[in-house]
Image (cartoon, rainbow, N blue to C red; front, side):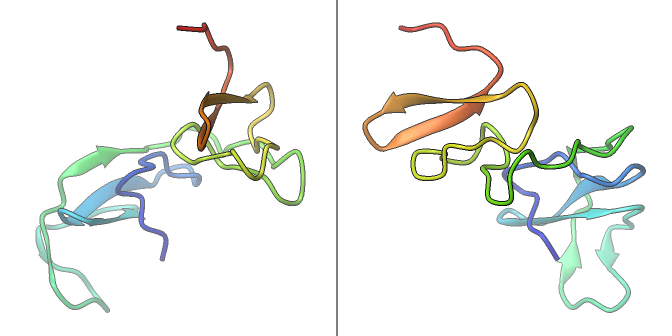
Length: 102
């Protein structure tokens, strides 16, 4: 299962990013605080975000950078249509729709 703690948008409609621990969250349809079926450990079920109304568009290339929260410095193709990889520092770049220098 994918950790959505830092990238809280869920790709599937009807799913929400729920927190399990301060460092782990997952996209689920529902969450009840405590123990989840087929999982060990207690969940806080704090909503971090991500209830996508529609699925994200298909990636524009076979290898791409998912979103602004991931470094596209080495893989400059952005998955989301209309996004471009902009350099912030010598070692960090992000996929954004627009970028204003400064």
